[in-house]
Image (cartoon, rainbow, N blue to C red; front, side):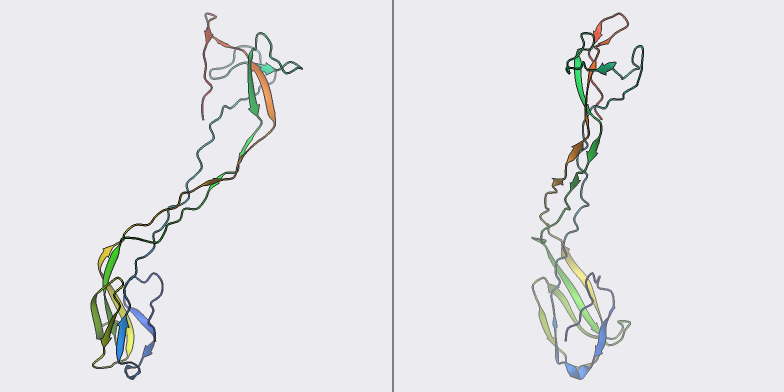
Length: 205
């Protein structure tokens, strides 16, 4: 017969299922504690898309507001005008379909743990029948029962814990960034109030 408190048992007093009559057994094998697995981190987010953004304004006249350049459509042959020599390409929309694969952890390595295990004849874990102390990892222990009594509940105490470490997986980016329709415009050099040409770098978002 096997007594199992189920996955995630923290050692608190737990019923042994159907009570086991004392005459049904003469010895008990205490299984050793096992190292629990590592909990992986949530998947990260892909790095943001670095891009320049443009805003088209129909019929605009005058100097562009701060942070903007004045641009117009290309000639019919796709070339730029003398006063608007800087050709720039923009896509109408970027659709980011990327995601990161889930993180996983390998089996724990290099750790060790030990525990005291107790069997009881009552559901409140007050009537101790048998105890086995200091059971280490990989050390099952068999104990004879001198005065058999029904087993009703069980309890455990962790006495030593070295969790070890787990080898993590490397999350990978899947999916693509889809581009919409391409638009080409010609932009005028930015000038200062005195007429000098200014160098300008579009903001990176």
